[in-house]
Image 1 (spheres, chains in turn brown, yellow):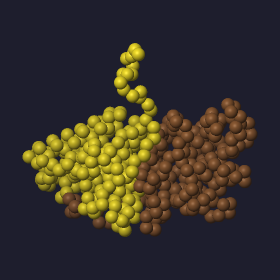
Image 2 (cartoon, helix red, strand yellow):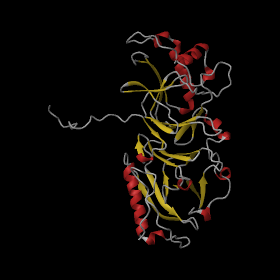
Image 3 (cartoon, each protein chain N blue to C red):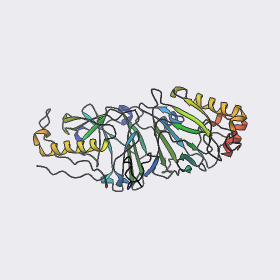
Image 4 (cartoon, rainbow over the protein chains, first blue to last red):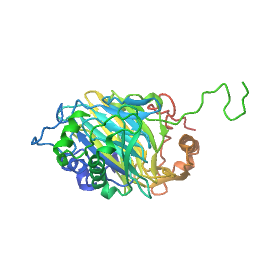
Length: 213
Length: 201
């Protein structure tokens, strides 16, 4: 308490607007990815065990407890555990995907830090995602690899964070539009359709794909 | 087998740095500069040793904590001077944003600081002290952070702290004449959550 003589005695809300992003009045701003300066951030609440059913009320990006997280590394596809009270850093350039949450591999030029928080008191389990704000041509990519042999099937890029979600949905729809995109040119495997992270945008066939992978 | 000199035979072939995971309670690894962020984590089950974020606003100090003990996720803006109780006895500001996570779960308190996000940052920092009587900055030093040399930067910070501790004239507040006490250097490497107490001259 070295500074007890010069502490500010006003509530933090009065001196630092939005000082706690997890506060109820702020958290809704982080349902997608919010620009917070040098970083963009998303906060996801684990609301339910399984995938949202059509017509069920939910946040746009719903994380079911049953999901698995994957990355592609030198050894192929690996499951990345989400351990309570941990930080996982997905390095730039690493294709990564969350089962039932977004139906493509996200590859970005910025690192992502993922904090996993369990339920604490009345606070539900949460996942906080931080990544550097892409600038000056730094790119987000939406890619599909063959489920059987990891051949790259299809990829679209986005270099403007402001149009990230529009670019993401357009990439999904482009991939889904032509069945030839889903056939692996190496092994002939027929891969499932893609789907957006914004589950309210799902078409019926995309919702089927969300349940599948 | 002939070694042509690019990779010493006795050493493992270098591989790219891939993704990794750390538990919040694993303070043993200290500061890590991996990829695009410098990250520090602290854990305590002793309320007296909890890591609490302080921010300097003008010549006053704000304690960044939730009074009810709820989890706090907070941005320390680029250029904001901050200190962390029970980690550092001095103040730092970086030329990039930082994100602070403060989690309390029963008797356990966890804190995570991530520094970075912008390309090529952090590239510069200011270390100083703050007069606890009038809030004046004391003994500021501007330090460059060279690419991939965050650990060298931390060593430079501690060297400045040791100089501050041994040179009493540096510790006199120019605003009110108060003599700032010597302060702990920042713990580095293993057991990096327990400050090393000063040896005052």
